[in-house]
Amino acid sequence: MPGNGRKTPTNDLVQASSTAILRALFQRTPLKSLAIMSCVAAMVFASPSDAETPSIKPGLSGVSFLLGEWSSGKGKVAETGGTSTGSSSMELAANGAVILRRDRTNLFDASGKPAGGFDQIMMIYPEGGTLHADYSDGTHVIHYTSATVEPGHAVTFTSTSQAGVPTFKLSYTLRAPKILDVDFSMAPPGGTDFHPVATGSLKKED
Image (cartoon, rainbow, N blue to C red; front, top):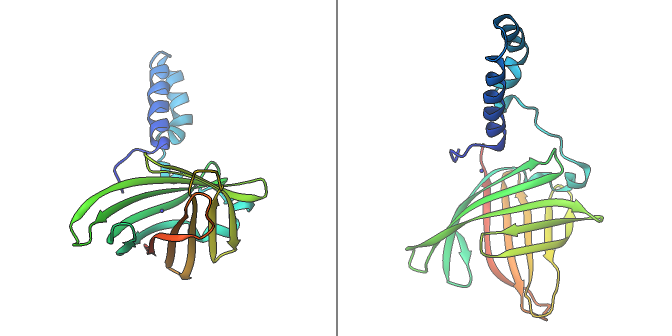
């Protein structure tokens, strides 16, 4: 669903470009070096924040309400009787053709004691007339291959039903301008009745 001290790929590219160009400049005559430096300085040393924000592609416009920095209060974890808290960043990637979600979830047991945590990532993209999403937490992978969208308000992703494998649903509902309800449910292999696994709400940060 994102301040973590990690360099972005853009930062890496700017740093690498700076090194390569400066090395080439110092191999040229001083006058040529100065001329080239004046032309490329703005490009090389510009802050990544100066880059133009990509426009969202039409296939994602119905779920643009997901974009932003979100944080959660306590959510319920049905399997353990415990709770969870976390943060989620959702931003445009791949020139606006993808929404990239990055999460950090902290878990607590039924007594409120810390019970570990995990990072998650999910890529949302249009394909074949529907939305797809690929999720991983480093241990589990879920491929959501269809979605039901209420533009500007809600989306439910559903994974493909396969023999011997549970089916998952992930729903986001914009309950208020800055409140996003999240529901994750599962149906057992061969079953069609979905049971809640985790529910909670995210609050959009200013």
